[in-house]
Image (tube, rainbow, N blue to C red; front, side, top):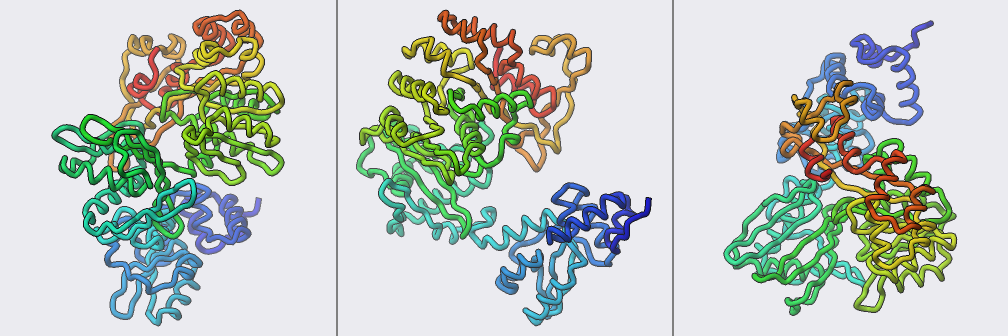
Length: 567
């Protein structure tokens, strides 16, 4: 077979054995078709590692190679090169010395970039080769401006953040004149930004008799981040209440509010705020609401292949009920919204009732439940049924009335999705029974139950295999056959990329489809143990078994498995 004709750079990459000739040729053609640089295409499609490509480019063209993550941001020239040119050519100004401007590029064949910027700035341009993926991230950080690069916010930047309270009537600015409280404003803004930067899910502002502390929940674990003076507790609570447009005078009742914080032109983050009167003042908890999490897609959530098939098959059914259960913060809403995102097409009418709406999705009619104004789940559901719905999502089934209307809707040709606070799939069915829902209604309307937990994911960079004795593995729940076949268990180590050896979280799921055998048990008012036994005999994995699979795959550790599931 003839070797395809390759350009100089592609040929060199093939010579260095980073790619074979066929792949390089195809990639080159495809990159030209997609109108993206050849190097960017290779990195995006993970055909070659960006650091090796950068080294080859530097050697081939005789340009210096630089690690862009080590750049001193203060030395970067600001407003010298227009945003349009930076984005168009995928370059970043690094340093200006006299009449020379050093530019970070990942594709050395892009000589047009150097010429255009030279013409635009009147400076002599010199290319410096950097890694493509790091360059993209650095450009975004650079263009987001002083408030976009969260990591390097100065005190002065913390004063000017655009913070709005999201109210029922209008999104009105709730900044107010806080010149006296400038340090408080700065501290609160810094805490919010730090939490976003660390990828935390919740912030806790907690007053005690002699101390005050701020804690963040990152990857499901709370850790202390600040201890401001105790006497500032009242002012901190007041500032958070002003930001979220709550009643300042009311300190004896819990309150709910929302904050929208604009951190750059293109990026805004929502927070759900709740206050709770405690013995020593008001405790304020903020939940960071991430609309992007629903758009991750089902593959990112951590379902096993068979579980994913069951979930997708249940979503395709025209009617029935999908129930997602688990404790608070276990990712139930994200699971439901991932399902809704799959169903969100032009031909379907989707309505959701939540307390409050956490994830905003275009194309879905979302309703905030407000019991104070007489709008509870039951009333919202009744209204939905007059709105010609195809799919209904109920934030939580809390009482018999909501359960009954949801089941009626599921029996009359609608797809109903909802959450319940129970520990396992079998317990969900008995919980509905205890609420007062007749067993024949449960048996005929529920299609699928998902019980879930979130476990911390082991850091891919530093995880290490552990020597675990056979007896321990048997105790943990591994079968003798599995152990004989060979099971490698990984444990956390800890490096600069992670926290205590963990980075991110993975879902652990028990997905149970309601089969005829289970329907019979439900009709006979069977208890959760009987239902669980039938589920096991039908081949559905329990939470514990799913968690052990994740440990076996090296995704999480045994310690995490034991933290989130117990036999």
